Every structure is written in structure tokens, then in C-alpha cells.
Image 1 (tube, rainbow, N blue to C red):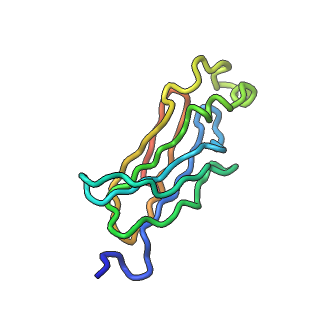
Image 2: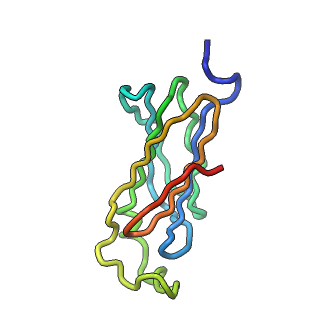
Length: 135
């Protein structure tokens, strides 16, 4: 018998805001991995890129029995492609990004319960990030 409520798959969505310029982070590649149990093996379950609004809405529903999810964001490629002009458009943004991204990737691991939706926003800048469970 399934532990998920009938017809309600467990799902994940995300979006990224580049707080250094106050805009969505477009084109960030990401992967979604899942596992069952804290000692289970990670299994790649999906991949995508953020859209023009910094959102990723097309990740597949999670397999039945998933207890942990990992989102991995490829931030180094994003920061190496962001133009200096974009940063200069914001008065308080750094004019020169000295070394690209201090964090070349961001991995977020979180626990899930059957039948719930998890929206996990990432607030990103070249030298730090913050994440939370959104709605």
C-alpha cells in the first residue's frame, strides 16, 4: 500500500534571485536527486535550468518512498556569464566581480514528506547564499 495520499505526488520547485543585482538568475543549471532513508543511495531524478524569471517549475514529481532531496545548482557558470554591465546598473552592486563565484556550486539537501509540495528559493550572490522553504 502506498504511503502517499492518492493522487498527490511529492513535488519540488525552485527559483533563484541574484541579490547582487536584484534580479532573477536566468539559465542556472540544476539537478534534482532523491533517496529513500538517510543511508540510502542518491539517485539522479531530474535536471533543468532556471527560466527568465529565475524559476524552475518543470522538475519531475518525486518517486514514491523519497525521504530526502538534494538540489545542486551550478553557480560558477552562471556568474562567469553574468555581464559586468548588469552589476553596474545597480548603484550599490560591485563593479568588478573579482573571482567569479566563491561558491562554484550550491547543494541543498532537505527532508520531504509524502504528498507535499516543496518550493525552495535560493537567494544568491557571488560571495554567499541563503535558502528557505517557500510556499
